[in-house]
Image 1 (tube, rainbow, N blue to C red):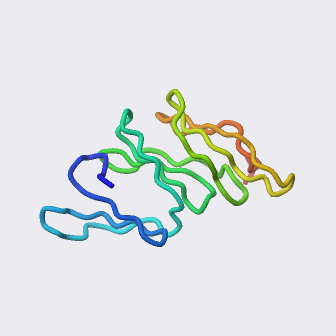
Image 2: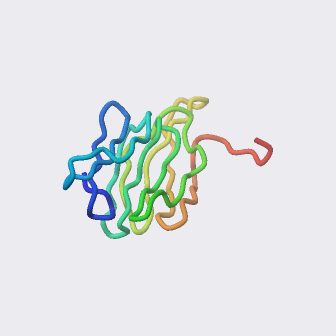
Length: 121
């Protein structure tokens, strides 16, 4: 897929992302390690990355923009863009069900996640 900067290309294989300069045919960097899904959001010029099915990150033209807190115990499904938000379902291991959540595309603020958040952690 094309990087949001419109120059480089990102190839994801086995959870690892490779940033490539296609003009020079050169590997520029490697990141990830547990990438499950990448959701392009052309209107915001970002790629939203699902890491290990636990949290999301946004990659913009100049680099990473935000990272959510952990939103799921073990898995994120049905990731999609809806009216300026990334929406999906996070797995709640305690109740054995999916819980809807949303993330603001601009700020990375998550609402409605399955994974409990405590200030003290």
